[in-house]
Length: 264
Image (cartoon, rainbow, N blue to C red):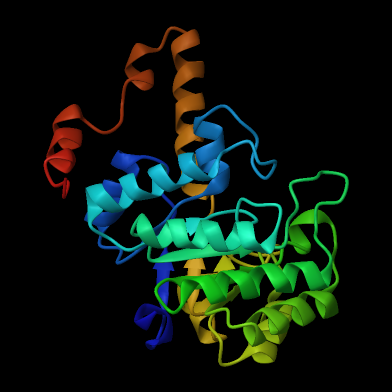
């Protein structure tokens, strides 16, 4: 939690496998996170529909922590459970698996009604906090903006209630603009706020986000999609017969150098 409360806070990139985690650790990041979207995609599944199990995500998070020795925050969707008690079970398991933090969203996994009701969402965060007992950082998250609900008032209401329930960090991915982000940070202060890259209208710098009081910056699946974009370009080059362009990238010697640094 100290990383969130110091001047400047932290940038917490999201890894998707052992090598990506090692690259991020080697670059000097002090903590990393899972990405539910990236993890689901690596398994050939959709994100946010309960297609990845609690156990799969726990093992994945433990791998990232084991190879790097870094604190890992788990992007654990809605807490993998129907009831608040199920969320508590997930938090207990995350503690047992050595995670440093865990996010609990107000999503439902139901595409027809993706956001849970206010009272239910708050109850689930409260259950997570009660189970954590201060042993793991709890992020309370509302996905209003991600699911076509551009209601800043309701977003702030939810985040404020999550803070009152004991959440350590608050998170509303992709507010529409900087003005909305500033309003969120001010409304929930002094609880630290996480931002996914930037407001949706403009990608800002780390310094600009820190300047308005953001304490944690995560990237979700952005690094994974960046790597996937490079793979797609290489595949197109290969189809066109360009072997040279298709086979550039990190050398296997460099991969082995990184693998030799694992904390296994």
